[in-house]
Amino acid sequence: MPIIESVASKFKELFRETPLLVRSPGRVNLIGEHTDYNDGYVLPAAIDEAMYFAIAPNGGNECRVHALNLNAEHRFTIGHANHSDKRWPNYLMGVVEQFNNAGYRVGGFNCVFGGDIPIGAGMSSSAALETGLAFALDRLFALKVDALALVKLAQKAENEFVGVECGIMDQYINIFGKRGNALRIDCRTLESELVSFHHPAAIVLFDAGVSHSLAGSGYNKRRVECSAGVAAVKQKHPAVTHLRDVSIAMLSGCKGLMDATVYRRSKYVVEENDRVFAACAALARNDLTAFGALLYASHEGLSREYEVSCAELDVLVDVVREMPGVYGARMMGGGFGGCTINLIQPDAVELVSTAVRKQYAKKFGREPKVYVTSISDGTSIVVP
Ligand code: GLA
Image (cartoon, rainbow, N blue to C red; front, side):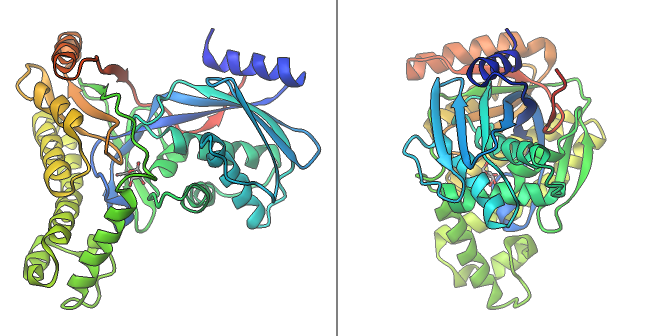
């Protein structure tokens, strides 16, 4: 049974009424990693894998949420949500609390959700939860919050309630994603441009199966290191507020003003920002070979300079490097686990996936999960 039907039928079984149905996608990021919180550029796309919500108001102040995949339930009262050790309820409670704090009249609701975005694979299941619920509540209670404000509210829920200082990329693409297109987002102005992706290449994700917890990882630490880079450059260039404002020449000129780690982190970010533009140019001229080379370069930087990769992800990139039909690969998302994104000629996908499964299993004793995904629309209401 399609997931949306399982979610809807569980809702009817539990609550005996007709819910609003919402689909909220996961995302890939083609290139531009760890640039969003540096006011830089990113190139993500919404994907087929998604979280589905069935939801209806219950007239009270209590929210009852059922996680179909986990067969678990959580209840909380609006205005009195406490952190849960189960973790998943925090993404939802954070959103409700943000609406409430901002003065929006959100009432109690019953909700069942479930989906096929793997957890901890770097495909943004958390943003799908937050942003999907924000969208659903907006429609359910006719709040009429504009789309960008919903994005920011969902991001704030993660920053303040979950405690991860994530940037805006995941929530943004979740709402604004368009089928067949990536979006080049300027994370300073929050404007974006559609980048058509109708190339003869499959987007394939190899999931290392190492679960990362952004909150427990070095994610927040990287943000601090980037701020240290900005503070150093600012001594010579007072107008600089983010690494987005820094060129490689400016950074080299300030090398003596920061420690070696901060320099490496900053250098990665400055170069990755440039790679986003080079990648868009390569796509515009249908040069997938050049695009793929930029993916490999991004991975090098993430692994050696930004140091957010891990042995499993490095192996996944290394093993595809010489395989025929592979344009490029890199780790994707926050890092410290999750998956790699690979651009592969469609007729080579099967051979490459089989070879990767084998070689990875030889090294780590288990096979990576493989997702051949395609680019979908952002969050929307599902008409049954
Ligand atoms: C996570 C965060 C994003 C972004 C990426 C790294 O997915 O939620 O805001 O920083 O990591 O590019």
